[in-house]
Length: 319
Image 1 (cartoon, rainbow, N blue to C red):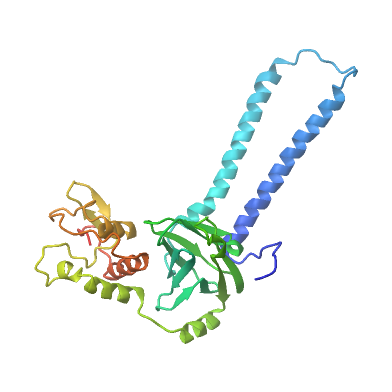
Image 2: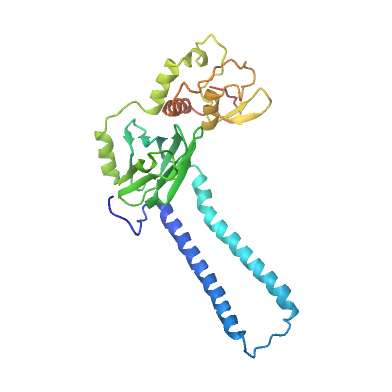
């Protein structure tokens, strides 16, 4: 990783598509540049000072039809290039149906990674080749940007928001991991690596890592220790919404709106409980803003998600 890489390897499904678009843009731009330069050269020679070329009035169609055709052609080319380039982003925005969920939290100045089995890494991310990974990204302090050049993938990570990046490595090896957003005085030191292993080697790597509690178990412990269970579980004397099956379902609110209990809703309900009050309940829950760090919020969300999803006819509650 110490040498300078002039040509980056294509180590993910998206890398080949991204490089193809870049090559296409270079070819199109080069052809247009050659066309313009050629026309400039031809006109400069043909209509140079002292030449006998006709300089009479141009035909009427030259001012209207040619200009209209050129405008429509360049506009159509722009739309085609935009659609071509945006198609990959739209595809990446669709959540994968089957994927291993790995969590990453950015903080000054490191990436904290946690695997489903509770294995943790700092500034390293081990992945199995050929498997789809749903990387869930959060920031604990400022804006970071998770960037793997060999994968041609970059995702900004904004405090207060959960973002996701879909990764499918296609080639084993060790690749650079950067923060691509200036995040403070030690930004340049926020460097890590992504290690892509064969499925067998990845299984071996997992087996020798010290296992901690997985996120949902850790979230359950926080749920009890922070007093959430005292209000939101069945034995509670406080009338608060129950959370079993709430994730992913519709939640009717006191103001008449209905929202979906996704990651963002769960997070807002913990930090801003009076923002979206569930219909039929009083806004008595205190805010946990400042009392929980980003890792704890991720764990609590994972625990609530583990309680199951609710179907479209059910009602939900605010955590």
